[in-house]
Length: 80
Image 1 (tube, rainbow, N blue to C red):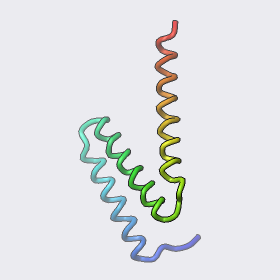
Image 2: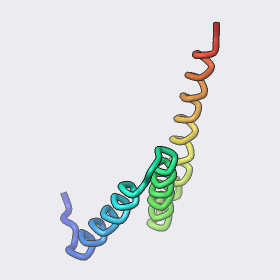
Image 3: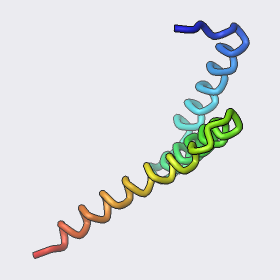
């Protein structure tokens, strides 16, 4: 496994601290979901800038899959 440079390690720690502080500061599940969405979108944008052309698409597929699962569960709950 490749070791991170001290600068890269510091950036990762700062990024984790930033998102963890935002997550701890929320007061509702809806606000938490928004912070998590923002974090995922930021990660996908960074990945795209790093050459991963599918990052945003992969995030979209993941979100669509989750939404479809929730919708199917709702249909099952309301089916007699």
